[in-house]
Image (cartoon, rainbow, N blue to C red; front, side, top):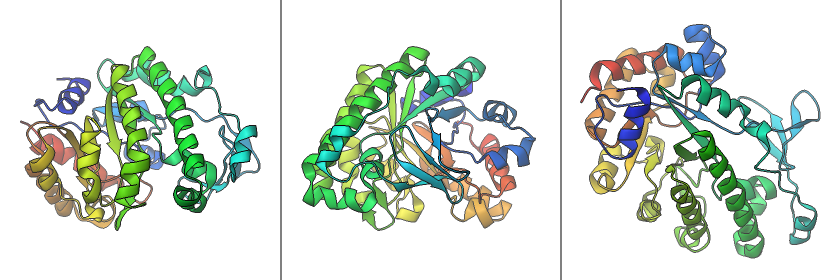
Length: 335
């Protein structure tokens, strides 16, 4: 099987010849450390990774060497690996009158995606990344105002979620026309303590909108993967019931056990995860890495499972641990 065939088979809860792997993010320094490559597509080919996830290209206005305004009007600053939102375009309902969404039909935001599809899509799966309904209003309002808005300005939050749905649906449609078959929604809705808002409020205000994103993906012929860190136990039935095709990353730091999730939901969704990237892939020994891979395989195999890190291959991951994770998968992951 090709990597693309493996991932598509697993996402449809089938049994591929070998358990596949894909990461949402791999820090570019890992490319250089392991292969000397700067190009993400060449990197996944050299390490025989089954797919690659691509975000839309940013349209930014630089403010200085560390701060910029993105296409949504959010001011972002680099403090480490990723730019954090530090300035927000909307504070009150009246601000929406002057708020302008960027065009989802701008060809400039699909340049990297097109290159990946042209480069690797015959052998490897190219996954399109989109927002669903949580991160856009969070970044537009600011995190504190966003959370408070569920109580104080629910209509404002809902309008922003609707704007996110409209934008992401158009992006998904455009990605599908380019040849994308799988979408990943990467909005975190929980941390290690539980959901970021109460489960009841999640069901009342977020879940119906999220279901719209899932339906839009399926209507456009796309499989959809939901990523969120954290402890999801209180809303697992809701997430699975939304119609998603796969849940990621079954966060061990959120007290999530992939074996338990597989036993309860494995006949309805595929699972992706969850070699611990907070410790095993950072400071663990090679023996630790192999033990973690074997544990994940034992709980996730044979069908409907994709092995990956528990979040991403971030800056602090030991490159050799990541390489060894892939080697262990190739050694032990055959069905």
